[in-house]
Image (tube, rainbow, N blue to C red; front, side, top):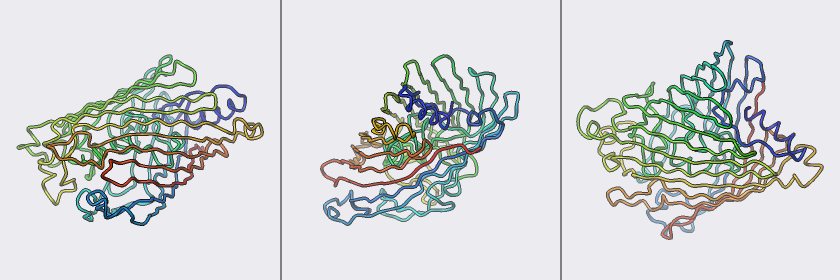
Length: 433
């Protein structure tokens, strides 16, 4: 069962006042959407508008008092527009692709790097912001055993395993996980996955992360990126995930990642820090979704460890000012993100709305996260410690569409100014063929 089929079934069961199934894993084959047909075409997308009632000046953290009364600023954005194409060749062989357009554009983008004193930089991410997030061939031996090879989603954490916009209440992806982990985390490798009874399991062998991309404000968030025409695989990583569906309406999961990151770059330096240290990355995550009795509750807790973090500033590519990597700031040994959200469908109490399949979730969310939880070499970046609250509504006129609105507030340490904002958006997810 897939997200699209799940939505339709959820609407029917809700109308009959029966409990619905818990969230279904987003990594399952796109061919399951095809409902027995060989070709499947679908996708998802989201458009958002935000008004931020805080300063966007590059020195808002280094000189917070000077920017306490700065004017608000707003933005329109298309965070993700995605096209799925899948095909079943027969005899257990299938393929799947996911092409994503991020922020409505492609090519080279300019960014103002706050952690580098507001310096303008020209950023290239895989040649722009059009990415091939999935491209794989799969052999299925049965429900219990599937082997997938190619470019695949790494299902570590709630956000990566369930990243479509109808799988979270906020206008944008949950902020904590989206800050410290790659999102969506996708890499080239091999995956074994299957279902047995109430369990879904997956194990992956991947190209390692690249420590040259790690930052103080994003930890390993960009570590899966490559500015080259290929993914560097001097080092390797492994990921695993286990989901359980034993209790009706509830899904709980454990996931994790292990790999080395220092020296997984080009050119590979045979001497110095690049060769002497490993940069071991360990990530552990717990997440759950409860979807029953007109409630949806989701939560996650992620903790990460980075070995040799104090050495990253001195690796070759980070010292070369002409390289396409981060050149300043220490990286933390530890990072964490904890979040929970809950929403209740108030239309479930209105017979006409319930019969029509419309839903209106009133939700609240709380999260806390810090990509720089350890002060490397006694160098603090206290503005990275964030507690965030959000409240709003999600209106579903039909199961495949959500109109979202929220008020959110970031609470920073007392030295800094808090960051409130208002956001509205619309999102869809569906399969057309």
